[in-house]
Amino acid sequence: MSDLTGQQVLFRIASLLLILATHGYAIALLARLMGDPGPGYDGRRTFNPLQHLEPIGALAMILFRVGWLKPMAIDPALLRGGRWGLFVIVFGSLAVTLAIAELLWLIRPWLLTTFSGTSAVQTLVLMSENAARLSVVFVVVNLIPLPPLTAGLLLRGFAPRLHVGLTARTLLPAFAFGVVLFAADRADILDPATRAISDLFLR
Image (cartoon, rainbow, N blue to C red; front, side, top):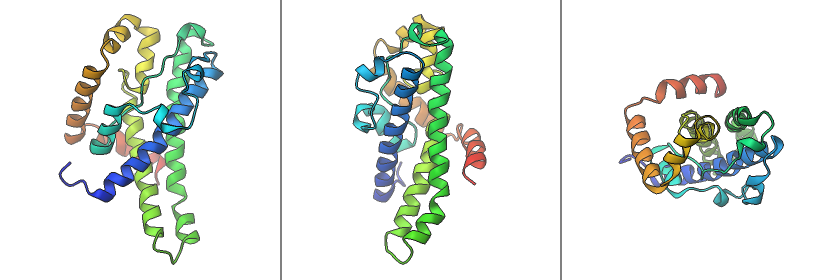
């Protein structure tokens, strides 16, 4: 964190808002398509990033590149396919985030051409690259099947007692999980998976 510059902080905040808006909306929309309208009633079927913001997860993403959204209440009993519908929601929403990362990476030549000769072009390209890379890290982290991460939704259907136990007290577990993920990021534990996905999508 000591080498984190003001520009990087601003880029990460911008990336965070984009990820919150699109990933949160994707989860809520897929839940609705699979049969559970609950997230829409909770105000989560929106592109407003503040509706999906979880303070500790957001701070962890800005400072350490690892983070998560505010957990979303989804009832497996209402889903088409029952608890198996959670797989569609989890992996579908993460696929959307990866698709956006690839799009951000692919538009860099367009940005260079469209804004050529302006002082903003380098900033726009760097923002696009930063958002793409941060999106990939977000996907890798949120594949871990533990709340408050996206894949933690799977526990709601397949290990409900464990899910309740882990989410009963949200603040302390989220803080502890943030510390664990920070340690994992510092130790480069996530790097192999991040590099593999980046090599596949960000070329």
